[in-house]
Image (cartoon, rainbow, N blue to C red; front, side):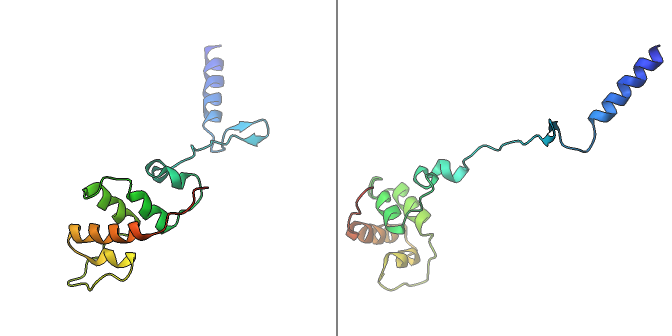
Length: 122
């Protein structure tokens, strides 16, 4: 009798370890992954699914205290720096990334971000 019970328990455990996914009725069980990513947590405006223009993202950096490393990091997140040995005067906001000195880059971005006309908020 003990041998029969052991055989039944062994066969059910072997059956439970099959390579097939778990089933609910006749359909496979689906595991849902949570929505959201690290990027969505860092930038809540991007999490809404509506892509923002560079101008809007640069203007958002103006809300951070002026002359701080945080504001420069915000600008650098929008337009990553790519310093050149001796850049000429910036003709557009994208040229600010070529300045090697952080103070020069911050001043350059501030000048262009402040000159952008305010866009209406929807």
